[in-house]
Image 1: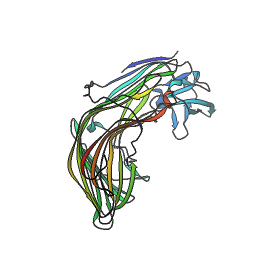
Image 2: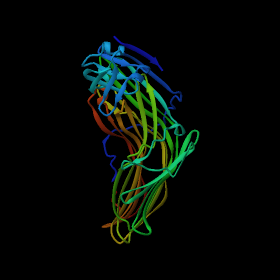
Image 3: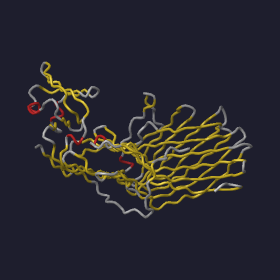
Length: 411
């Protein structure tokens, strides 16, 4: 056997509800760590970090070209699982000699087909100033930064009817963030949605274990996600807006190697807007969220469940007024940080997030003016690449606070 040991909204967050305790979080270890302690299956061939430099790679076709004299070819057969350090995990479908090279064609394989027994884990500090700022692409074209430096970045772009702005200012232990969405109907601006605040650094931990090429446990946890965020919506005669914008740009990337496995933690954001505002209608709602929570999900060999705590949180009301000569409703929310986890380019956690929602409405039959806020934790998980054919969406918690209620409002 081949063995390697290396110590090393309307909001669309309505999922299967799972309760969680509201106690404070236990402060996690701030020390980063990695463990790759596994026994490979007998038909797994590993191309290590030195040998991978001699392999010509066609990433689009998942085809790999070796020198005919490469000793790694001695043990390679059709049907084997091929691990190329930092590049790919694939099943060999054909091996052909072409001139001075040997072409190896491959197909999809899952991690449990390569790992017989063992543990793979890591604890990564998500320090905002240390994140990799990716190139921003929209519609296949790069979006230029308004400003970028080691202290942060800012960019703006237009998508559909809306103008978006995103700004990060990095500090040693936190980041100041600003998000903005505006809608213009000629002049003036008729809708503005903003979120501004601070998020502190936190740790992202993942652990998985295999026995007899079977995933027996999986735990992904992001502890002490804390900060404050003030959401504001201001609309006037803006008409109807229904927007769920899973922002197609990664805001920050955190790559790391765990054994031969390239792991990437992506930080993203999701925007949600849902408004029906008549010509003479207007709404202003603002609320401040402060929180210290843990998002997480775990698999114990038989069930997948939430592993999360809402922790200490407050929702403070600041400004709330909505009115019109006919019914009006305005809602704005965002999920941030929206974390995505991938191994060998395969996404196993599409999202795990804290989310914030504010809204105001006014109805006439009976007359009622309301403003509400929600603090939500949610996640999606897909364990197929680990060998367990399971995917699901879960609500970790969902708490609502009434900011204003005036008139004959049904309870």
